[in-house]
Image (tube, rainbow, N blue to C red; front, top):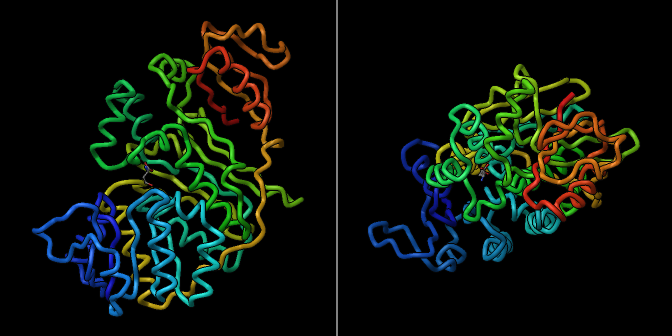
Length: 381
Ligand code: HSE
């Protein structure tokens, strides 16, 4: 099957090299880049060279961002081409519309690399769902922040230095704010929850705390508490149909499976009625791991795998019933907080009584008015 790749950054070039060097049955005929690359004859700057080429059956989008990725993938589907994408922002934002367009045009839309990088997460989640009911998805879904937390904890390295390293290694987004503010993980959580629960979880309704303001002092505090900090996503479906979905740095006991996930690793977990708890672990970001997921999606299409079916009906995340304690580090005067939520104040941080994720976000909004650099982390029971 002949293919085109949009974008020749880390993921696009990784996917290209895999198809070049391994007999996958996928031949990449064209690659779209922003800048000319005269040494690569298959490269074009004109998307029409791909759109109007009837031999190209599948378009692999690895550009990132909403535009022009949206315009290109919708045009490709309207022209009868299958689309695979690594772009969580695009998939999350246009979830309903892209699925509808794929159906209308009788083509496939697949996006395994959009959550979990090199981990075959979404495809296995869909496989489990064929004979099971998933009640929960959770885990580490951002490689950049896992890399930062790992290097700050194990190597005592400063935040900025490790972030720059993650950018050099191709883990971070073009604007790493999406990584360090938890937005990239939030989008991956929304995509995973939408597929798991056969619905469309509204991106804007998820709540996220990131790690932008984490300091060496925080890492020392976690150590003295006997905890390991990881950026975790969690989405859960309650029996009454409500869905909780959120992202937060989480203090885990050192023997929790997630605590052992190193470097750019991700670990994704689902809970099914029949299968029970199932976790997958691997590299969640990077050129070849994510590139290989993109190639796998193309192979699935060439082998006529069953199309992915989207759920229907938009739902907002409701985090009012998800309750646990929080670590808060701030120079805010904690005595101003109602005393009944404070368990312990220790210098510049406090541990709260269990409170809902929704309430923790209200409290964060209040504290950040006086201390925008305050750091919040959930504490796993
Ligand atoms: N910036 C993302 C991450 C890339 O660090 O996980 C993979 O989606």
